[in-house]
Length: 291
Length: 179
Image 1 (cartoon, rainbow over the protein chains, first blue to last red):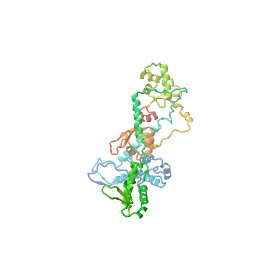
Image 2 (tube, rainbow over the protein chains, first blue to last red; image 1 turned 60 degrees about the vertical axis):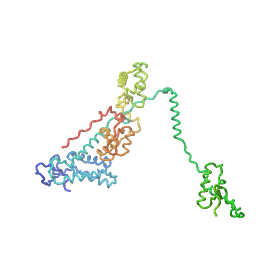
Image 3 (spheres, chains in turn green, yellow; image 1 turned 45 degrees about the horizontal axis):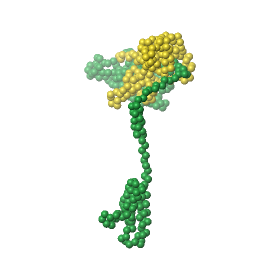
Image 4 (tube, helix red, strand yellow; image 1 turned 90 degrees about the vertical axis):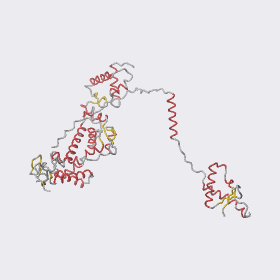
């Protein structure tokens, strides 16, 4: 790039409708004056940049710094100069491995877009066409106002730093006032009910371990039946060698025991270990080992 | 309801302001230490003015802030008083101050509106600090998608920066007219 700055021409007024015009670019136009010679104080040495890098609060802050540093007016925003310097900073941030916030790259893209739009030949169909820089200028101004306000806020006298609140202790014989409030019966009842309600909410739910195991019961049923079977050797075929269904249940274990025994029997029948037989209609159910 | 004489009234108001943990308004005084007495606001204000007058040449002065009246050291002594405190008062980052300034001047404001002006993301830490210091609070939610929280400043903020009200915030620099 040969020019250090370029300014869009004033909104063209004389061109005829639809006429394309390639702008003649002076080195810079500052406040309407053409600057032919390159100002000497534009360049900021990269070494100097490094020191101030971390002090920036974001891309707007950095842009503002660049503009103020060169005593430009925000409204004259010299896009090319600023963009080039801005990119130098961003490059520098990369080289010193500063964590480069994405906002800086977004701003770089915005600057590049504005610059490219300024370079485009102007079609003067719409004389009211907005300066591509307008939005950025507005944001910079808005940010500068807040930056300034925050500095003023910081300068305000404030507690801890500038204002020391005067306080004293109470005298040593100070007696705090304890309010004795009369409680009527209804309040007491209400309070009690609230306590009851709370206790209900905190009731513990114990999960009991199964005392009677179905698997144990299955084994004991088989054992009982096996104990009977030796007699089988001597007994004739049709002699009953099993146990009566009701014999296997014990009343001591209650409902739970009955259920576990029944489950165990069902499991054994499913596995084919035992059989249930009935010698007569409505007769006793007998349990025998399968052969 | 008891009656209270002027001499004791001034004494009572003075001691209450000195021992209270935070500033007291006329209403606060009437509802606490003066609650047993038959007294109008006018006499309380009179007592406060009497105190201000009594203290005018002393090292502490009676000041009215956003949260009420408090005694504080006169600023004339500040530089020398600083030697008393080994720990310096907290310094606040530019990011925090800019965020606070935006909330103070543009309230109610959402986080993304703050980010729009500052051009960078607002860290959660800053918002958390401001909320914890009770300088800002959430006043509601903006009726836009996501219902973002709207932040406003509090009386504690005004009190901390010794501002009687938001109207006394430093004036914003004038926006130059875009040519």
